[in-house]
Image: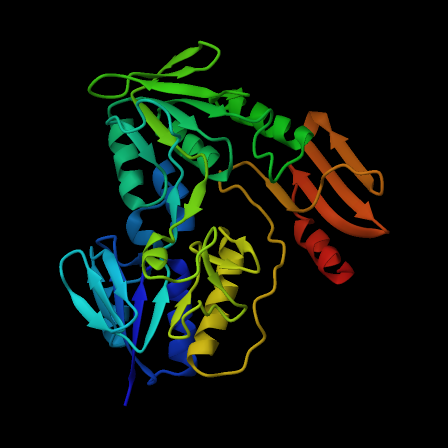
Length: 384
C-alpha cells in the first residue's frame, strides 16, 4: 500500500527532492503537490535572463506537465494551502480542496520584504520573486517606464540589469555604503558600482527611502534627505523572509523559519520542511546549493534510508548579469588575526583578495576575473 505524500509548494527544492525520491523509492508514495502559482516547476534562478530577454519562460521549465503524468503526481496549480490540520492529517486549499497525508512536506519558500513606508502598496510597486513579477516588469518596460529598484543585493542588481537591457531608465537605491556588502568587500563593491554606472544604471548608496510618491499609482520615490527620483515602476528587492506562517498556524515550532533537524523533520514527525522556509541549525538558506542538499537528505529521510544530516557549508556567490564576473565565498571581514593577499589591476578592472587565518583560507573575493574561484573554494574546503 502506497503512503500518501503531500507537498505544499512546487519550487526548485521540492522538485529536486522528488527526483531523488523517484530514483530511490519510485513506488513508495502517492504524491500530491499544491502550487500557489498557476504553473509547473521552473528555474527561478533563470528569471534574470527571462527579464533581460536572453531566455523565454519555456526555456526555464524544469518539469513540464508530462513529467507529473509520467510519475503519477497530482498537481494542483493555483491552489494555495490555507490550513494544515495535524490532528486529522489533512491540508485544505483556498478553493476548498482537502487532501489527507501520511507524510507532509512544507516548501512554501519565502516572501519578499516590503519596506514599511508610505505608498508601498500603490499600483506600480512590484517585488521580484516569480514569473508574474517578471511579466509585470516586462509590461512596464514596453511602456518605457522609469524604474527605481530598492535594494543593491543580488536580486536587486539582477532586476536592474534586466530592466536596463529592455531599455528602461533605471536607478538603484541601496541603504548601505557599497553594493552587495554581504558578499563583497568595499573595493569590489565599488568596482561593481562603477561597472553598472558605465552601463547607464544610476546607483545611489546610503539611500534611505522615506516614502513612495503617487496618488492612484507610483510617480516617484522620496529619500530621507529630500531627494526625489521620478519613477513609474518601483521594484522592492530589499531581502526575503521565510514564509512560515502556515506552519506557525498549524502549531509547528517556528523561529525565523520552520525549525527542522538535520534530516529536515519538524517538531511533528509526520511533517518535514525544506527550502527557503526552513531553518536548520539556526540558519535559513536562500541559495540553491544548500537547498539541493536539503532536497537530497529529505528524499532519503522519506525513503527510510540512513543518511548523514545537513551540515552548513559556505556557498559561493555569483551575480547572473551578463558580462559581470564576481565570485565571493566565506568570511572577508577585517581582523587583527588575519592576513590578506590583494591583487589590483585597475586598468583591467580586476580585483582579487584572499583572506588567511592561521595559514588557512577563510574567504575569497574575486572581481573581473573569476576563473580560479573554484580552486580557491576547494582550498578553503580542504582547510576546514
